[in-house]
Length: 320
Image (cartoon, rainbow, N blue to C red; front, side, top):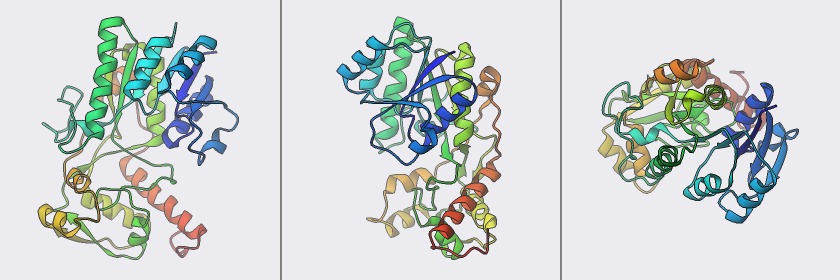
């Protein structure tokens, strides 16, 4: 049986990766720091060890005692990459998660893996991801470190993770505002493109990378098949709940001023930037085919969160 260790396997994305691997017959070990417990019950039957992958002594001891065929790191760091590359022996494949956000602003549409990747201006997160991606590709070229980088777009689905809101963040009361038919501001004309990936489809892509060794030394954008405008995104959330979408369009600069001090301006500017990608490379080389559509993913997430609000007594049940 193929042995896999999933660093961060008790988190939202990580536990979905674990569940898909177990379903397909892999021998999975979760490595977690023990700081996130929300999803741990869903993988309670999966062996779990606790430790910090950034701790050199822990990683050294882990790989001295055990060997794994495949290593998945959901949230890589320079420390974790260095520790894994230094101490993991005789493994076949290392796969880590990055983000399509580092391509922004997109030089062409739909964007693909050939575009420059460095991070949206003013952000540190995507610049850091570029650093991590470059490091594993450097190790691959110089030492043969068998790495693959998965770059998902906006991750959603599953029904229990806060969705993207109209300001480019993840706001707990966004679905409540949709239910109340509140007027929601959108930057410019609302035609910026947004492309999600369902978390379950994303999980599958990690397994497909394992099962297709051609993926070693490669980067893959993992997305649903098409984008929608942010205006349509708001409308789909409303349609899912039988509500009317009330939208107020505001020039981006005015909107930044209006919400100054309330939100992170960088996220709003990013929200107003096109996110539209092709996953042709993943389809061709990994045989990736998303099981969910863009529209059902957005609408299904809205319904699931609304049902949770009903359960908590924060909304009526007329849309369920």
